[in-house]
Each structure stands twice: as structure tokens, then as C-alpha cells.
Image (cartoon, rainbow, N blue to C red; front, side):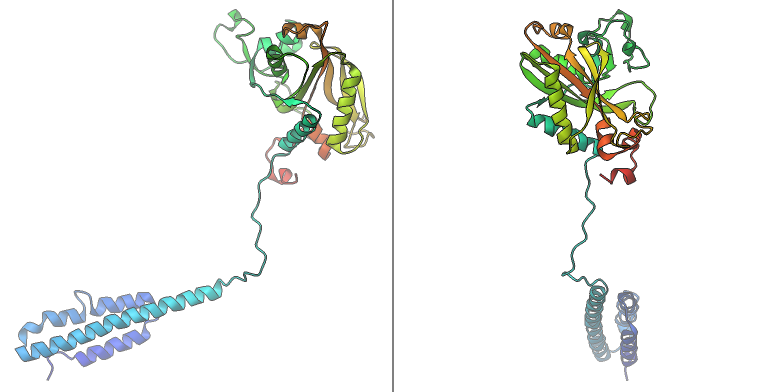
Length: 349
């Protein structure tokens, strides 16, 4: 007669294995019978009270059950794992013949698109792209451009000056500010290069002024400069008309209106028929049907002299335009929409 009822233990193990439907249940069976405190482990520790023959026989039978149980647990664990994979494949089945979903693709900001388009058009007309610093000094931003010392643009309401110690004792080349236009880059270029040349200067500018539907504190500007012999306003008008035609992809009606800028003489504003209202009048164009798009003129002789260029031999025109180009291109009635970061608006472009 056996000291331990191994047949009952084996029967109990089989019943537990039949009921085990998860890997967690198999883990509990392993713990119950094979761990240090498991039933089979206790049998091996209790063999001391048996005779040698009974000890050998019981140990052999217990070992046989132990090995069988390990194999059964591994076998069933493999079956459960395979079953789980099959269920997952059924639930996550993918029809590889279906077209894939396109991931969201980023895009350039509409103002960047506008700048790139403008640069592309001017490059085709032979203009070179020149860049310069956003923080400037008073010489390049005002003095070299023929701004008189008492010009209103120098005041705090138009210019962001950089705070500096003993500023009142500094020269104009030492006094720093955030550039109010990209014209300083034109001065830097003319100082180091001999005419003839055609350049455009795209970049960010800063002005201390109230914002509204057509004005911003910081915005992007493109300025152009062409210096050569026998250059006239007619050359400028031809260049700008061709630029507008290429940018808006249709013939645009413009007009030159007399104005004043310290760095040009004669000076004029360039207006175009408002694209938002088609010239019928709206808040953007102040009900006039026309919208001011750029300031321009023939480069003042003093500006050429400040750059070391003979004004008797060379002349040319300069112009500057801003973000209103994009406003008219897309018929947007508020410039601030480009800067508020609303993705619902920006994703339209």
C-alpha cells in the first residue's frame, strides 16, 4: 500500500489542467504542485519515514508525475499562446488590398508661401536675393537713408529702440534698434558692391504702432532696388506690372500716386484695385476701391552718395511691399488672421 495517494494527486492535477483556460490558471497549477511548498515538493521532503523500497517506488512515481506535469503545462501554455495570437489576428485582420490612410502632412505658412512666390518671380526677372540683420543701428536704418534728425519715424511711437547704457552719448552707428524696414540691407549691399545691380530684400520688420485689419507690429516685407544708367520711373512701372501679373496670374490695374519718402525723389505710392471688393468699396480699402500696396520712388542722390556711388552717373528705383500682397491674393479681410496661429485658418492654404 502506498504511503502517499499519488493516484488521487494525479487525478486532481488532470482535473485542474482541463479547467485551465488562461496562462494565469496554469501559473496557479504550477505553484500548487511544483513550487517549494507545492504538493509534489512536500512528498519528496516526506520520504524519510518510508522503507527503502517504498521510498524508491514513491520517488519514481512522484518524479514521473512531476515531469509529466511540467510537459503538460508547457504544452498547454503553447496552445493558449497560439490561440491568443489567432484571436488577435482575427480581431485585427487587415485587408492589405485597401488603400492606406494618408498621414497628415505639414505645409508652409501662407506668408512664407507668399514670400517664396515673390522671390521666385523677381529671380526670374534677374533680381538677386539679399538678407541682413533684424537688429540694426540708426545709421543704416535712418541716417544713411536720408532721414532728417527730427523725422517722426525715429520717435518711439514708430520704432522699437534697444535699451543701452549711456545711449545719449553714442554715435548713430552704436545706437541699436529693431529695423523698421529692410532698406538697411540695401545700404549695406551698396556699400560693398558696385553698380549695376538688381536686388530684393525679404525679411521681418518691426514697428511700434497700433494693430488693425491692415497693420501689424511685426510683419514681413520685400524691398527691391535696381541701380543702373538711364533708369526711369517707366522701368519701375514695367517691372511692377509684370510682377503683379505673375503673382496674381492675371492683369492687375494699378496706379502711381505722388507721395514723400526721405530716401526717394520723386516718391509715390503704388495702389491696386481692391481684390476683396473688386473696386466697389469695402472696409479694407476704406470704401475707395483702391488699396495701397507699396511705397516706391527713384533713389535719392544723397542715399547713393552715402553708399559711395556717383549719383551723376548712376540712378535707380527702390520699392517696398508687405503682407497685403497675401491679403489680396487670398482675399483675406484681416491681416491679423495670418499671425494668430489658428490652424483652422492656416490649413486652408
